[in-house]
Amino acid sequence: MKISLIDQQANKILQNEVISKIRDLINKRNLERGDKLPSERMMSEKFEVKRNHIREAIRKLEFYGVVKSVSQSGTMLAIGLTGFNGMVDEIISLNAPSFQELVETRISLELEMVGLAAQRRTDDDLDKLKDALEAFKVKLTNGESYLEEDLLFHLAIAKASKNGTMISLMLLLIPPILSKYDRDNVCEGDEVQAEIKKHEDVYLAIESKDAAHATKMMNKHFFKLSQYLERTKGE
Image (cartoon, rainbow, N blue to C red):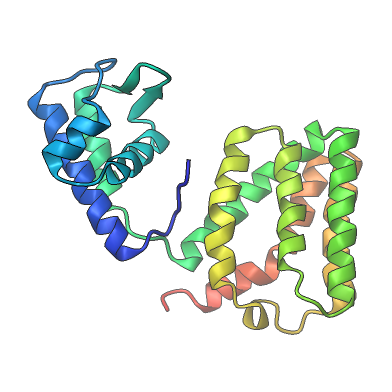
Protein backbone atom coordinates (compact mmCIF):
# COMPACT_ATOMS: atom_id res chain seq x y z
CA MET A 1 0.00 0.00 0.00
CA LYS A 2 1.58 3.24 -1.16
CA ILE A 3 0.87 6.05 1.28
CA SER A 4 2.65 9.39 1.40
CA LEU A 5 2.49 12.14 3.99
CA ILE A 6 3.04 14.70 1.24
CA ASP A 7 0.82 14.23 -1.82
CA GLN A 8 1.11 16.30 -4.97
CA GLN A 9 -1.53 19.05 -4.79
CA ALA A 10 -3.40 18.02 -7.97
CA ASN A 11 -3.51 14.38 -6.86
CA LYS A 12 -4.67 15.39 -3.39
CA ILE A 13 -7.57 17.46 -4.78
CA LEU A 14 -8.78 14.59 -6.96
CA GLN A 15 -8.30 12.05 -4.17
CA ASN A 16 -10.30 14.18 -1.74
CA GLU A 17 -13.10 14.57 -4.30
CA VAL A 18 -13.30 10.79 -4.67
CA ILE A 19 -13.22 10.29 -0.88
CA SER A 20 -16.05 12.82 -0.51
CA LYS A 21 -18.13 10.95 -3.10
CA ILE A 22 -17.48 7.64 -1.35
CA ARG A 23 -18.58 9.23 1.94
CA ASP A 24 -21.76 10.60 0.36
CA LEU A 25 -22.57 7.22 -1.16
CA ILE A 26 -22.02 5.45 2.18
CA ASN A 27 -24.33 7.96 3.88
CA LYS A 28 -26.97 7.65 1.15
CA ARG A 29 -27.02 3.87 1.67
CA ASN A 30 -26.93 4.36 5.44
CA LEU A 31 -24.19 1.76 5.84
CA GLU A 32 -23.00 0.77 9.30
CA ARG A 33 -19.94 -0.95 10.72
CA GLY A 34 -19.32 -4.25 8.95
CA ASP A 35 -21.44 -3.38 5.91
CA LYS A 36 -19.86 -3.88 2.50
CA LEU A 37 -19.05 -0.90 0.28
CA PRO A 38 -20.02 -0.94 -3.41
CA SER A 39 -17.39 -2.45 -5.72
CA GLU A 40 -14.56 -0.39 -7.20
CA ARG A 41 -16.04 -0.96 -10.66
CA MET A 42 -19.45 0.32 -9.63
CA MET A 43 -18.03 3.41 -7.91
CA SER A 44 -15.72 4.07 -10.86
CA GLU A 45 -18.70 4.09 -13.24
CA LYS A 46 -20.94 6.09 -10.89
CA PHE A 47 -18.31 8.76 -10.12
CA GLU A 48 -16.94 8.74 -13.69
CA VAL A 49 -13.33 8.34 -12.58
CA LYS A 50 -10.74 5.65 -13.27
CA ARG A 51 -10.68 2.60 -11.03
CA ASN A 52 -7.13 3.36 -9.86
CA HIS A 53 -8.44 6.65 -8.37
CA ILE A 54 -11.09 4.69 -6.47
CA ARG A 55 -8.41 2.24 -5.33
CA GLU A 56 -6.12 5.03 -4.08
CA ALA A 57 -8.96 6.65 -2.14
CA ILE A 58 -9.91 3.30 -0.57
CA ARG A 59 -6.28 2.68 0.39
CA LYS A 60 -6.09 6.06 2.09
CA LEU A 61 -9.30 5.40 4.01
CA GLU A 62 -7.96 1.96 4.94
CA PHE A 63 -4.69 3.51 6.13
CA TYR A 64 -6.65 5.65 8.60
CA GLY A 65 -8.66 2.63 9.71
CA VAL A 66 -12.15 3.74 8.66
CA VAL A 67 -12.58 0.97 6.08
CA LYS A 68 -11.11 -2.52 5.87
CA SER A 69 -10.40 -4.59 2.76
CA VAL A 70 -11.07 -8.30 3.20
CA SER A 71 -9.64 -10.78 0.70
CA GLN A 72 -12.34 -12.13 -1.64
CA SER A 73 -15.01 -10.24 0.29
CA GLY A 74 -14.48 -6.62 -0.71
CA THR A 75 -14.20 -3.47 1.39
CA MET A 76 -16.12 -3.09 4.64
CA LEU A 77 -16.93 -0.08 6.80
CA ALA A 78 -14.66 -0.52 9.83
CA ILE A 79 -16.36 1.94 12.19
CA GLY A 80 -19.86 3.37 12.73
CA LEU A 81 -21.29 5.99 10.40
CA THR A 82 -20.97 8.88 12.87
CA GLY A 83 -17.30 8.15 13.51
CA PHE A 84 -16.71 7.57 9.80
CA ASN A 85 -18.10 10.98 8.84
CA GLY A 86 -16.04 12.75 11.49
CA MET A 87 -12.84 10.96 10.49
CA VAL A 88 -13.36 11.62 6.78
CA ASP A 89 -13.84 15.34 7.44
CA GLU A 90 -10.46 15.38 9.20
CA ILE A 91 -8.76 13.30 6.48
CA ILE A 92 -9.95 15.67 3.76
CA SER A 93 -8.90 18.77 5.70
CA LEU A 94 -5.36 17.50 6.40
CA ASN A 95 -2.63 19.72 5.01
CA ALA A 96 0.83 18.49 4.08
CA PRO A 97 2.93 18.63 7.27
CA SER A 98 5.73 21.17 7.52
CA PHE A 99 9.36 20.17 8.05
CA GLN A 100 9.09 21.37 11.65
CA GLU A 101 6.01 19.22 12.29
CA LEU A 102 7.62 16.17 10.74
CA VAL A 103 10.81 16.55 12.77
CA GLU A 104 8.97 17.24 16.05
CA THR A 105 7.04 14.02 15.50
CA ARG A 106 10.17 12.09 14.63
CA ILE A 107 12.03 13.27 17.73
CA SER A 108 9.14 12.36 20.03
CA LEU A 109 8.78 8.98 18.35
CA GLU A 110 12.47 8.10 18.47
CA LEU A 111 12.90 9.09 22.12
CA GLU A 112 10.24 6.53 22.99
CA MET A 113 11.44 4.02 20.45
CA VAL A 114 15.09 3.93 21.50
CA GLY A 115 14.09 3.07 25.08
CA LEU A 116 12.04 0.13 23.82
CA ALA A 117 14.91 -0.93 21.56
CA ALA A 118 17.27 -1.02 24.55
CA GLN A 119 14.83 -3.22 26.45
CA ARG A 120 13.85 -5.55 23.63
CA ARG A 121 16.81 -5.77 21.26
CA THR A 122 18.17 -9.18 20.29
CA ASP A 123 21.72 -10.09 19.33
CA ASP A 124 20.59 -10.07 15.69
CA ASP A 125 19.20 -6.53 16.13
CA LEU A 126 22.53 -5.49 17.63
CA ASP A 127 24.44 -6.93 14.66
CA LYS A 128 22.27 -4.97 12.22
CA LEU A 129 22.71 -1.80 14.27
CA LYS A 130 26.48 -2.26 14.31
CA ASP A 131 26.61 -2.83 10.54
CA ALA A 132 24.55 0.30 9.92
CA LEU A 133 26.74 2.29 12.32
CA GLU A 134 29.95 1.15 10.62
CA ALA A 135 28.58 2.03 7.16
CA PHE A 136 27.58 5.46 8.49
CA LYS A 137 31.05 6.03 9.97
CA VAL A 138 32.79 5.12 6.70
CA LYS A 139 30.69 7.54 4.64
CA LEU A 140 31.04 10.35 7.17
CA THR A 141 34.81 9.87 7.57
CA ASN A 142 35.29 9.88 3.78
CA GLY A 143 33.28 13.08 3.39
CA GLU A 144 30.57 11.33 1.38
CA SER A 145 26.81 11.72 1.68
CA TYR A 146 25.72 9.63 4.64
CA LEU A 147 22.00 10.37 4.95
CA GLU A 148 20.93 6.95 3.69
CA GLU A 149 23.29 5.17 6.08
CA ASP A 150 22.02 7.34 8.93
CA LEU A 151 18.47 6.41 7.90
CA LEU A 152 19.31 2.68 8.05
CA PHE A 153 20.81 3.11 11.52
CA HIS A 154 17.62 4.72 12.82
CA LEU A 155 15.43 2.16 11.06
CA ALA A 156 17.47 -0.59 12.74
CA ILE A 157 16.63 1.03 16.09
CA ALA A 158 12.96 1.07 15.06
CA LYS A 159 13.11 -2.63 14.20
CA ALA A 160 14.77 -3.41 17.55
CA SER A 161 11.84 -1.73 19.35
CA LYS A 162 9.63 -4.63 18.21
CA ASN A 163 6.77 -2.18 17.65
CA GLY A 164 5.35 -2.46 14.14
CA THR A 165 3.39 0.77 14.40
CA MET A 166 6.53 2.73 15.25
CA ILE A 167 8.36 1.16 12.31
CA SER A 168 5.51 2.13 9.99
CA LEU A 169 5.53 5.71 11.28
CA MET A 170 9.29 5.94 10.77
CA LEU A 171 8.91 4.74 7.19
CA LEU A 172 6.32 7.45 6.61
CA LEU A 173 8.25 10.25 8.32
CA ILE A 174 11.77 9.77 6.98
CA PRO A 175 11.31 10.32 3.19
CA PRO A 176 9.61 13.75 3.45
CA ILE A 177 12.13 14.82 6.11
CA LEU A 178 15.06 13.85 3.89
CA SER A 179 13.53 15.67 0.92
CA LYS A 180 13.55 18.93 2.93
CA TYR A 181 16.66 18.32 5.04
CA ASP A 182 19.14 21.21 5.01
CA ARG A 183 22.23 19.59 6.48
CA ASP A 184 24.44 22.69 6.23
CA ASN A 185 22.13 24.69 8.48
CA VAL A 186 21.00 21.90 10.80
CA CYS A 187 24.49 20.49 11.41
CA GLU A 188 26.49 23.70 11.13
CA GLY A 189 29.79 23.40 13.03
CA ASP A 190 29.53 19.65 13.60
CA GLU A 191 32.82 17.76 13.63
CA VAL A 192 33.10 14.27 12.19
CA GLN A 193 34.26 12.55 15.37
CA ALA A 194 31.65 14.30 17.50
CA GLU A 195 28.91 13.20 15.13
CA ILE A 196 30.22 9.63 15.15
CA LYS A 197 30.38 9.60 18.94
CA LYS A 198 26.73 10.62 19.26
CA HIS A 199 25.72 7.60 17.21
CA GLU A 200 28.12 5.31 19.07
CA ASP A 201 26.72 6.46 22.41
CA VAL A 202 23.20 5.53 21.29
CA TYR A 203 24.45 2.15 20.09
CA LEU A 204 26.34 1.42 23.31
CA ALA A 205 23.31 2.29 25.45
CA ILE A 206 21.16 -0.10 23.42
CA GLU A 207 23.88 -2.75 23.65
CA SER A 208 23.93 -2.44 27.44
CA LYS A 209 20.09 -2.55 27.55
CA ASP A 210 20.00 0.73 29.49
CA ALA A 211 16.72 2.30 28.37
CA ALA A 212 17.08 5.50 30.37
CA HIS A 213 20.61 6.13 29.09
CA ALA A 214 19.58 5.28 25.52
CA THR A 215 16.83 7.90 25.70
CA LYS A 216 19.29 10.43 27.13
CA MET A 217 21.82 9.76 24.35
CA MET A 218 19.16 10.01 21.65
CA ASN A 219 18.02 13.32 23.10
CA LYS A 220 21.63 14.51 22.97
CA HIS A 221 21.86 13.28 19.39
CA PHE A 222 18.86 15.45 18.47
CA PHE A 223 20.09 18.55 20.35
CA LYS A 224 21.19 20.53 17.28
CA LEU A 225 18.11 19.55 15.34
CA SER A 226 15.93 20.77 18.20
CA GLN A 227 17.89 24.04 18.28
CA TYR A 228 17.36 24.43 14.53
CA LEU A 229 13.61 24.00 14.99
CA GLU A 230 13.60 26.73 17.63
CA ARG A 231 15.55 29.10 15.36
CA THR A 232 13.28 28.55 12.38
CA LYS A 233 9.97 28.45 14.22
CA GLY A 234 7.35 30.47 12.36
CA GLU A 235 9.26 30.63 9.09
